[in-house]
Length: 248
Image (cartoon, rainbow, N blue to C red; front, side, top):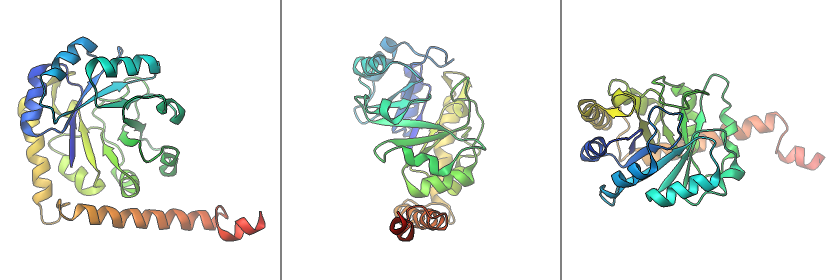
């Protein structure tokens, strides 16, 4: 499972996360965020990391030229879009894209179909002001439906205390944690980082948990079930069925 620690502003925190086993580290380049980091500082941190760590830049409704420029300057491996960006905007990106989806009570599970599979979706709590890092969890039941159909990174209020349950219920491709391992915005608590990774390890050791060797088969089964369910709903609605096609 991919584990991403986001909101990195200090080299010591980046190194602590990598030491615990983080696969990816996120830096926020949106000036309104309390976790904002200057691109030149982020470049210095990224240059000190091992080559196997994925560096991700978080942006919110910013010009594509700026986003691509920062990605080149810092040496980002991926771009995470946390605003109202459209699929056409994504086409202008020069790096692989993670698109954050504000997952609230009104979220439409089928609405994620607008995003091509090459875009990894990140499900986070709805926050039109702060754009993430709120510490609020999302609806794991509906999130699991999306995770069954495509690659999903789960975010939103994950902590050492609840991450095991979140993994067991959603079975995501990866998790993204920020405020759940902080003492204050942008300042990581190394003890809580350690506790988080221990909790993730326990989740895969539990007899009823999503053991790593079983995860691919389970995900494939959930995807098939989700596709059958959506196909049945479309047929009942007369959309996309052979009968509806003949009438057209």
